[in-house]
Length: 388
Image (cartoon, rainbow, N blue to C red; front, side, top):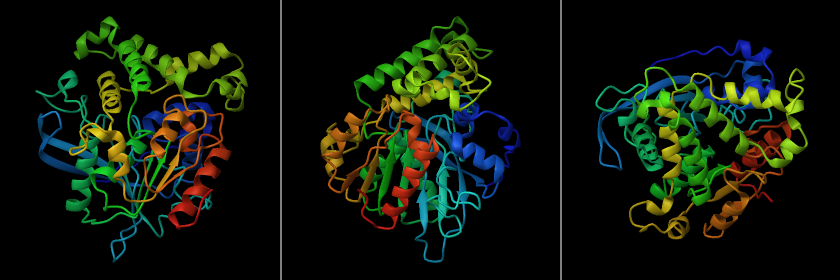
């Protein structure tokens, strides 16, 4: 275990839109980034858990699989105050600042003075085991594809063996974190009391796979990619990837109403917005890491869990705990129609779309209204109160 301190001082001088771009790297979304800049406490403590000879679903055995995670607060004597917050795409342990209560965010739902919060980092984010930090024979493009179940199983081992947590109060996940939350409820049905899934589904359907493949293709068609064996990052490919991602990130209404003008008054034209996203979407990202996590995203399917024979409906029917399912009403990554389809099979499910024009990031409090909506309803759900 170890502690790693990250300074967010410079973020207070950036635009909210730029904070969103930095969010992909630092695991925060707009409101959360500003909150960290103004109110640095509480700060998660960084830890690492190493699994020796970790066998992936593909059959590959990694000599060492490293899981990086952060913690807020302390586990109580009864061991029953833990909540897991699994990370989203290319995010790290700060990715849930929009939920964590602090002196300047007293309205947030999760109080680290009362709860023990664990923010796990997915394989492929560049900090947990990834193509960029794993030695041969698994470096770069030779790193195995990790499934959502691989991530969930590794974190379950970390929780039970290193932290000695036998039960969670909840699993709360945004985007790929929502994918993990659903998988937790299927793979370990009695391990948590409830789950919350925002802007994410239990399976990646065909249209989502096509989108992800277009982003992978944008990277790999850059000659500098060299089949993943590059000596310098394929910058043109990553910029093309960033533009494809950006096209899906917010809703059509967000672009039509030019809501980007609320973020940075210095950017006054659409061309300026496009250039900003093209060149600054995920600063410092590694191309093989970007691709690995997209492959993980594509393979997401609770129906592929052992015993369900590829039937996502049967897997969803097996969920025993209450579920708060919060899709963004304007999400293009995980359309609200997919959430409605899945919700009908989940026995104890509250489907509560987020009324937002901010598209996918609404599920992590992209606007003040989104943040309030999420925190109010998640707090009520965790308290066992009925939410509309």
